[in-house]
Image (tube, rainbow, N blue to C red; front, side, top):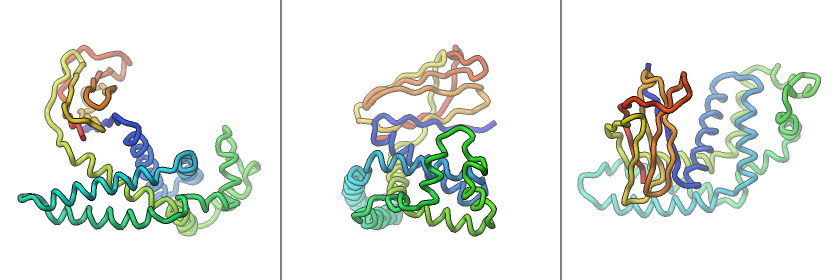
Length: 244
């Protein structure tokens, strides 16, 4: 078996970031492999999220806060100055891209092909060629052409997804995994420092998965046996990281 990492956001901002990161990974997977019509599901989900909420102001505030913190770290001894400089330059470039007035993904609303597909994709079994002949035509194109189309569509979201990837990397880097034990399948912790993300790494050979709950200063982890779908009464060894 293998170690699996589970993450639980402790505030709405990180919750939104993780959802966008998840969709970004799906976009990348669909760009590298031909998944036929399934490639449109993460694209349309991202369109809907970006239309429902303009994340730019929140992300720009986060970029400024992290640039300030990185600048302070740069003055310390025994730090990885190259790594810090990489994040400073990357965040500065991302800030410049995100400050453009056009909302991410807004141009895709003018794409008649995507608009027609999006109206139908929410319906069960609506991808038949008699429902969407234009999709049937597009799927018959060579993979290289469809790959170029897909790259052009998802590139509209790069100004948003690139800084979110960097910000989540920095968030995860604030804590290392430490050994922990859930006695009778339960673990509880607290922190004087406000937390934003709890990460649990557990060997799948245990046959269980964690359900994590909490808020800024306190969290609880319950392990559930997958086969029985009930709380485990065994002691579970796992790795824990609590990120600020």
